[in-house]
Each structure stands twice: as structure tokens, then as C-alpha cells.
Amino acid sequence: MKKARQERISPGELLSLVGTTPADNVEGYRSAMPWKSKLAGGLVRSLFLYRELLKTTAAQPFLFGPFAALAGWQADVLEAVATGPIKTQARIATRAGRNPDVFAEMNSWIYQTYARLLYNLCGRFMRNGKFDPRVALAVSTSEEGKQLLRNCMKEFRWLELSYNSRGLTRLKAMKDLLKSIVVLITEQPIDDMPFMKKNPDGTDGMSFGTWLEEGRARIEALWKHNAFDIRDFANRYMGGKIGYLPYEVIKGSRLHSVTLRHYPLPKGTEPNGKVVYMATPMINKPEIFDLARGKSVVEGILKEGYHVYLVDHGDPGPGETELGLDFYGKTVPDAYIDIIQKRHPGAAVYIMAYCMAGTLMLPYLARRAEECMARGEPMDIWKIAVMATPVKFDDGESGHGPMRKIIREEYDPLLMKELYGEVNVPAFVIEAGMNGIQPGVQYTVSMGFYGRAYWPGAIEEAAPFLYWLTHGTKFPARAHREWISQFFLGNALIEGTYTLPSSVPALDGKPVRMGALDEAGVLVFCYRGTRDPIAPTGSCVACELWGEIGKNIGVSRGGLNRLIEKNVGHIFVVSRALLAEYLALVNDFFKSS
Image 1 (cartoon, rainbow, N blue to C red):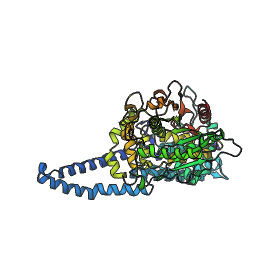
Image 2 (cartoon, rainbow, N blue to C red):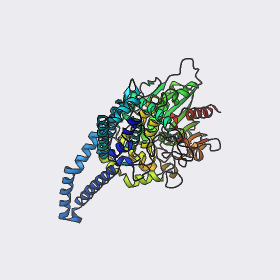
Image 3 (spheres, helix red, strand yellow):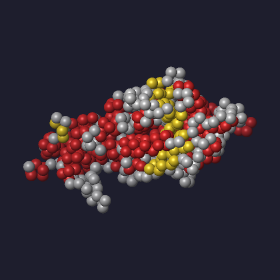
Image 4 (tube, helix red, strand yellow):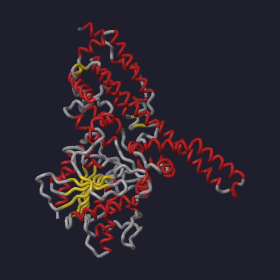
């Protein structure tokens, strides 16, 4: 046995064959850095800006003389050979559900292929679903086995060298997993062991033997579910479906792609006479409110006897490209609340909204309050609970400075309209922007999933959230431009410049007066996380600004992302503990008089 160990190939030799690649983050970036995508994006913006300059020149022949004709000809050539094909490619990719960024699309293929190589490598050591150390010993000591392992490492290296990003990426997490597999095969430790628990002083918190046992259990679980690529795994496991509870789509509720769902009360649950209207973000699937058993806001609210209605924005298509925030922030809630009040006459209706849905519902309620007062009627909705809802957007205390910086440097409304004006903004584009303000989120999500894989049931339990996380929805093109310009750049709610239509002529098209919430006696409940980069606490201040401020409720959950399954402070509902806490608080808020 001793002789066999001496002849065993070392992890250092194997990993040296992979070498240093873009997957290693030698630069020390704190987040993913898609440098090729950024470079290409800059070039594309420059091409479109140059084309617009040529068009402007061509449109002024009295000023530029014969140069105007030359500029017009150049603009036509540029459109034919460059900007036109770019627009066509973006439309085709979006309609096909693919990433219009060819470098990011290539990265997706690399993730899938790398995962297949990991699966095949692990499969060589599996016997009856268990990682067999005896097989690992035989392979790592025989010349044939050593050569097989060397060839495998060269395949991983080829993929890593083809990668188009650097920094804390998904591929770095997959490479760390590969390192742990190499250690399991050779049973020899390396420096900076992946998944090694640490003591507060930085020393190893577990023995090498314990690490090996845990590592084998991790690989066995990942191999069983073929869960090395989180997106591919979530697709297969969920079968393209998400959501826990049954619901009905209210007949006659369809407004373009938007529909209203009704979740029936469980058998034996007595209705409490109140209704909760759940407003969902336009960029995510609405199942963030109904991920799984024990992780469903809808489930918790139904248990308390509320009638639950939820907005589903569906899959926006060509018919939704010109719909703006006036539609999604006024027409839709007006119609749906009218439906609810007709179905439940006299019942109290409360609103619950997550993220940007809350940002839109707060001014909606303010405008509704203005309309009620203009008609001499009492306010009919006087409670709203918002979750991780930003309302203040500036470069200072709101915490949105980093995102606003990215928007100023990389966002071009003209280019967005040219590329996606006919097909809506794909989720991949939204995700790229979000990744820019969440340090290391690609890496930490994957490593968190791999790290917990050895826990019984952890992989299966993570599947609904991973599916939701990796499958956003398209953002209607005009609404997206308005969202960026009015909120992120315009800070419209704070500046008092956000306008909405109204059935009251004196209010139609006028700026919403947020102070109407206080005058109408509206109560606001805010739930926010102190480590949420998407909706920082300095931005989630609705309960401090509007409504009956002295009676509003604001809850800041310290260190939020340390307890969340995927280390994402913005999405607390995936934690059973945090969700139970939230449900208890919001139920008290809704039931209080």
C-alpha cells in the first residue's frame, strides 16, 4: 500500500497541466469581468454613434454642402455592413431565447461542456452511486490511469483558455470543484483547499480525513443529479416549470401579456375577509412569491385566511414593446383591483410588492389617493407591504451610486431601442447589469451550491430557486427605457417628477403627489436587507418618507445575505427562517387596526 501511494500521481502534477487560465482570477477582481463583452459593447456603441453623426451631417446639406451627400452614403454603407447586421443578430438571438452577447453565449457552452467533463471524470470512480477510493487508487497509480487523468486535465485547460471572462466567475467555481475532485482522486492535499472549513484564526477547521469524507459525499450527490452546471441542472430538474401551489387565471384579466392569478384557500381554512394583491417585478418570474413548499409567501399568506391574487407579467412579445410604465403602473393595477373588489365586495384589499413592483405601486397608491380625494371618496386601499423596494436613487446615501455609474458609462437608450425596440430587452442584458453591482455573485452562488451539495436534500431543495434565478423574463422595451430614465437616473419619486394618467382630468398626466399617501391615511411596511446591493437600505426608505410615518413599520434585517441560501441579500424568501420572520411581521401589520 505504501509503495502504491509513492507511485500515485500528485495533484500538483495534474493541476499544472491545467495551468493558470482565465478561470483563476489572478488579477484579484472582486466580481466577474466580462472584458470581451465590454470591449465589444463599446465598439458597437461607437458604430451606432458614428452612424448617427453621419445621418445628422447628411440631413444638413446647406451647412455641410457636398460632404452631406458623402456622409449620407457612408451612413447607408455602415448600416448595410455593420449596424444593420448587428441589429438583426440581436433580434434573432432574443426571439430564440439566446444571449445576444456572442461571448456570453460562448461562455454558456463552456459551462455546459466543462460540467459534462466533470460528470464523466467523476463517473470513472463511481461504483453503485458511491465514489470508490479503491478505484481512485488503481487509476492514480497505473500508467494507463495516469495518462487518462493527464488527458482529462488537458481538456479542462482547453476549455478554460477559451473562456471570455475573468474574475470571480462561474467557471472559477467549477475549477475549484475540479481541484477538489483531483484531491479526492489522489488523496493528497493542496494549498488553499476548496471547501475547507476554517477557524476564526484562519486555520483549517477540519481534518483531511473528514474533508475527504465530506468531499466524496459532495461529488456523489452532484454526480447523482448531474448538477455540475447549475442552470442546466435546474432546467432538467424543474422540467421547465416552477411554482408550488395551484392557481386559476381570472377570466377576462388578460391585458396584453399580463394576467391575474387567484390562489384558492386551502381546504379547511376560514377566510378572514381580507384580500392581498401581490405585485411582482417585471423582470422576474412571479414565482418568487411561490418557490416551493415552506418557501412560498403565497402559502404563508393563505394559511392566515387571506384571499390571494398575484400579477403575472407573462412573456412580453412584439405587442408589448411600446407599453410604458403608465400601463404597468396604472392601467394594470386599476383593472385588477377593480376585478378583485367586484369579486369581494366590501373586503379590505392590501398590497404586497417585491422590489421594483413596490417602486411602481407606491406612486400608484398615491395617485389613487389623489383621485379618491378629488372625488370626495374615502381611500379604499390603506395598507401596503413592500419588500426590498428602492425608491431613492442618487449617488450618495441611497447606495445606488455604483449602479448609476454603470448606467452612465454603459447604457445608451438609442442603442437599446435600435437593438431591442422590436423584441424587448432580454433577461441576459438585465442580468449582466445586475452582476456588475453584486460583487462575486456568479462565483458565490455556484460555490454555495457546491459547498452544500453533501447535505441530504440540499441539491433538490435548491433547484426551484436556481431555476428562478437563471430564468428571468424580458423587460418591455419602452417600459425599460422609462424605468432607467425616470427612476435610476431621474430619481423621479424624490424629485416629484413621476407622472401617471388619471380618470380625473385635473390629475391626468400630472406628477404624482406622494404626500397624498399621508393625507389618505395609508400605512407602509418596509422590509429591507443591510447587505442588499440591488435595493440598498438607503434607497428602501418609503416608510420613512410617505404614508403615516409615525405608524409605518420599517424592518432592516442585518447581515441578510449571510443566512440566505445563495448568498444574495436581495432575495430573502429562499430562507425558511427569514421568510417565517417576514410572514409573522407582515401578518401582524395586515391584521392590526
